[in-house]
Length: 335
Image (cartoon, rainbow, N blue to C red; front, side):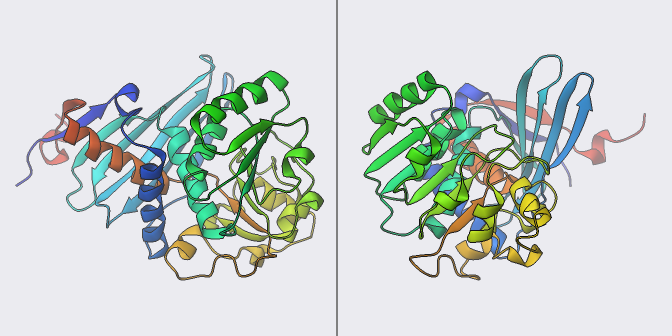
């Protein structure tokens, strides 16, 4: 018999301090393992508004071993010129609602964790120098998470505004063991790097792919739009290319689409999805000299995995507010 269900509503500040980067990475890695073993997930769907300018975005995933399913929905822009993120999580066995999260504060952490899983799957084990292009919230999340999967000695950060990159370097120096330095150009950041992270809002390539040294890994998580490419065609052409979801590479993976249009690759250039590598169904890095790219456009895999982890922790700590949900068998009457 169906009964009323309750879910835990969690405000953004109630989840902001619930987990460390390593815990996000562990949860997200497990989510991608399930994806590699067949867990369903869809690429984002984005609806654009011209007046007022904005976008409404959503994506879905079911993680049966985690016992959770759900999706991320967010509105960005419009007349408020801001963004709001919501994450409903359901029990993947019963279908009952478990939680509703205000998803803003978790966003850089879950996205950073996906990037870190990509680095762990594809970067050389001896990687010691990290280059970061970007100095905003997403760059913070990427660096904090990635520093948990490789023992870096040095991190170089570049962004166009000197004060931004310098304050980022100072903040990360206080938070992390590696030396973090602001540099004056993308080429200075990339020189000698083993791992490159791009976390920008740029619509055009942020570095010259010819500068990548053999053996470098690149994680790109900036713009996701068919006409915007954070990485140039040379980078994609030179690299073993791994997306989060294969289905999205010709939908919104602008760097891949740009390389296709330039004629330097074809659709067979996709090596494997990240989940295939995490699950052991496809090889990751196959040689020390190989250049690799993880194209992290964002999926509900990391969102649901991280959100469920936060829900479990909040429940254990007595955080959040219980809210009622009436089942359709009771409420969907048409009366």
